[in-house]
Length: 139
Image 1: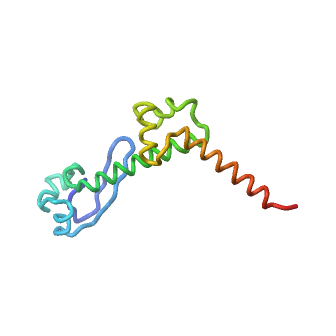
Image 2: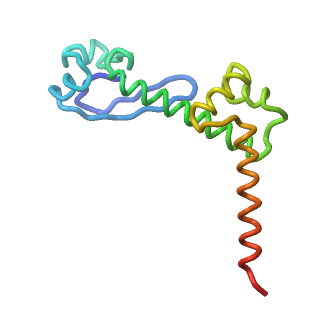
Image 3: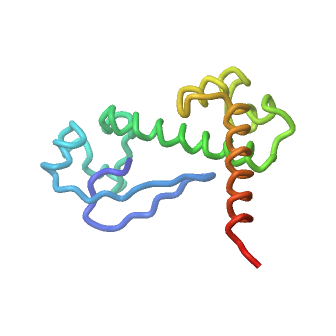
């Protein structure tokens, strides 16, 4: 996390990353981040970098974890639905799960069923939609 600054700054880092720019009043920064503004003031090089874990509230870190979890689920669901996997064990590894048991547990926790059950229900829904569309369309 970059610290207090009075002008724009460049941030360079190897690899992929993302960030959010948030402009805060010094008093608001202390209230939100829980540390005095002096700890966020630029150093001799004109920059300040503070680890996000040191200043972000636990709720914000938990939200980030939940969003990453939901993103992983959506990626896996798209691959299951699209048939982009050889088997569920390969899918588990490809989507960042330690093994099939962890993939299965996460799906049960998030949507209440296993990937296999979800896929069967999705296929049933798709077939029902196709039959309804076909019945509604006339000559």
